[in-house]
Image (tube, rainbow, N blue to C red; front, side):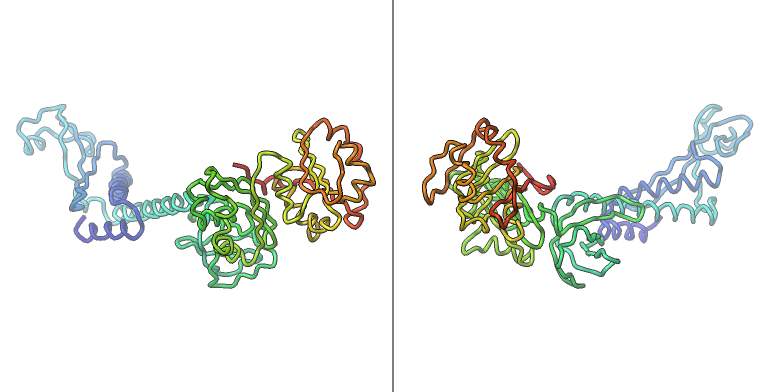
Length: 403
């Protein structure tokens, strides 16, 4: 071993982030392996390497005997006394093994073991680096299409954006810089296999953490997220500081913060609402921007009846039912939306004990018993959105996150 090897190890340590101590240990093991292959065994052989100079010694510990039967493990008395006159039979004598004794094959074997160890350590370092980013976001560069999947470069590894994790209609071109959510990192013989997503609800959460200091430090919590990637997302936020408005903090001055997230998601609409422990108020907030007359929530059954003004029905339901569908996912409730006219025709106000007034809004009611007594009203024949009703329930529990 020499100065050139020392410089090589220091370069590897710097470029590949593999400690010199790990490499020296690999070299020691490789020399032991070479000894075992060359001599048939290596139990009595010790290898030491000076970490400062990379000078090494390979020593066979031999027993002093009168008659040598195994030259690898034994040394005769006469030869031992040449090293030290005090040696007697039974003593252990360290005998240096010169590297030339290994031969060309042994030397090549040692080299291969060293290279293999370097590859293993490099793979381990890479895996640990990216595994620590699992469930986080990273900026990647679009590389190329792999069938219907897309290769995304994340620096030292290429990740896979599967078709199922791509936003429908989003066009990604080579060299595009995008934020991706790290779904999973697997350790394989070829290095870490990283799967990423552009559709996961937590991508939105992590983007807000990067843009909103109050979210990052925990002052503002994102309590739930419901997302239809590429189209619309609803998030419910809560402040642990009464002096901090959670919605305002996420929106930012002139919408700067939320717009930064929207731009990263390429125009996806984001509704930010206040979280409320009261289910009725939470459902009302979740249906915004629509105005609500009343909400009757059954917390045990996770069902809610919502009555809205006639002119707000289409807004509450949203295009193709999206607003109500996202509200259901956000709250975890099955939501039955009825128009004011239908509620009057079916006698819901009287059934629920609500005194009806023209243009009444924001009447929230939460009572399991009354809800169950009026259960048969919800089982009435529903004739679809055109008739002024929507019955939507929470779908895909993976899209909902509660702190």
